[in-house]
Length: 222
Image (cartoon, rainbow, N blue to C red):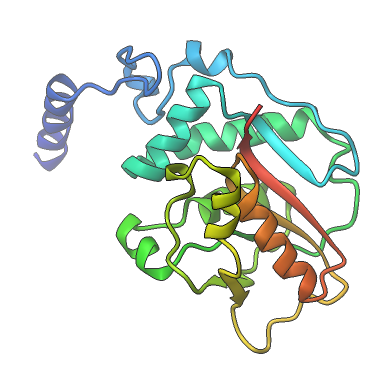
């Protein structure tokens, strides 16, 4: 009886609140309802090609409307059904860029949120992306930095100099025993626009003694 009622309730929800593509607003079929982007929109996303040795690796361009819809859905609307699409995009990037990670890396870390903002959002989107990426490349993931100032959202600031000033000195080691000396690290963030946040975190890791820091993002400004 419970199974029948559950199925009836699910079908009723599908009628009342049909799943739609975050980009084109087209209704998603039953077999697509666990995704956030329809197959047509997903197929039009360009996966970027990187070369070995690059210090900034980006899966896609932020100007792509489907990518922007995915990131905004996750970051500002808390749509975790974006994660399967993000996972597939990262897999496609790795298929197309087999030589990019030929260098030896020790672990993956990510841009931390201020605790107050993470509590409000319910998660750190950079950590979620980092966990998907770490599993795909079979590297450990470690939190290294903490955010000591609850800075303004970078997306609300247009001036590049103000963006840099907004995140200046906002990262410190997670603990006094944190060590990254002579280590090669991949630092994950969601978006690279002016680069102010990622570069501030990268500089902090290098000041802590990291040998090499490569930034990995889901999208970068074109």
